[in-house]
Image 1 (cartoon, rainbow, N blue to C red):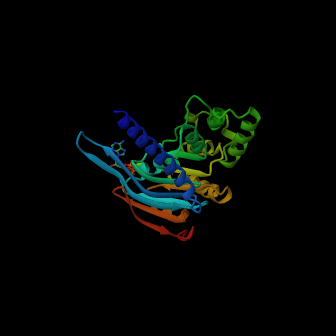
Image 2 (tube, protein in one colour):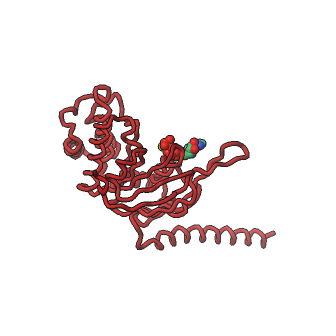
Image 3 (tube, helix red, strand yellow):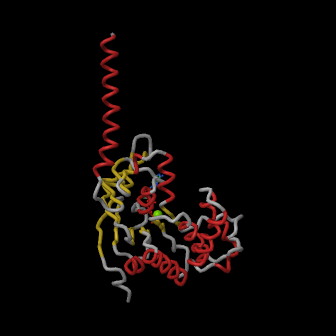
Length: 267
Ligand SMILES: Nc1ncnc2c1ncn2[C@@H]1O[C@H](COP(=O)(O)OP(=O)(O)OP(=O)(O)O)[C@@H](O)[C@H]1O
Ligand SMILES: [Mg+2]
């Protein structure tokens, strides 16, 4: 009996050590990698009691600092699921997501908070708070981070200038056009000075003129601020115009990755 208890303790200790060394090894192993390296990413969800559906399957992708990556594919191809897995809004079932040499799937809560601060996100539906005005919406992430009032005000001014909305600072979302709302959302996403901006169909609700303004803004954010951007869109001509890497998804898989010189199809 005593022998069995000792044996089980040894086995447990061994498992614990294996887990720890796996964590350490993975962090040490990725010395020379891209800014983001996605390795064999899979996401399976339970659809009924006995069936599972593969939403993402063997996704492999490298993203370099300063890339402007376009993700295209038919509805249901897995674009949003893929994008949301990069900041772990959706947790994959298996695989690795290496960001700045660390596998974020091993991150604890505190590390995840800090990671998400470095990753801005914008959506088709803007997601602004209707009870806050433009500058309050932009300031929100910085307030949550408990930055001091002067720092927040300076950053809000800088961002209002960047998105060309200084004259709308006291307006509420209901008083803004779609394009203006998306510019507020972009300013808010940039408020914590992220290195990466995830954009899930940010122009789908906009007319062609506002679509162009938003995409040109994203392009200048990419070029001038050096922020890496991943843009999900159904608008292939815009993707061709602005992106240097185009990922085509189909049935949860990457069908192909095309590298192109930015602006090659700029007409
Ligand atoms: N939580 C979930 N439960 C069940 N199925 C899901 C869930 N999330 C996503 N799916 C399924 O996964 C697939 C991929 O969905 P996803 O939203 O990533 O597609 P998408 O390429 O972004 O499509 P769209 O262009 O319409 O936005 C779809 O078939 C969707 O129904
Ligand atoms: Mg989607």
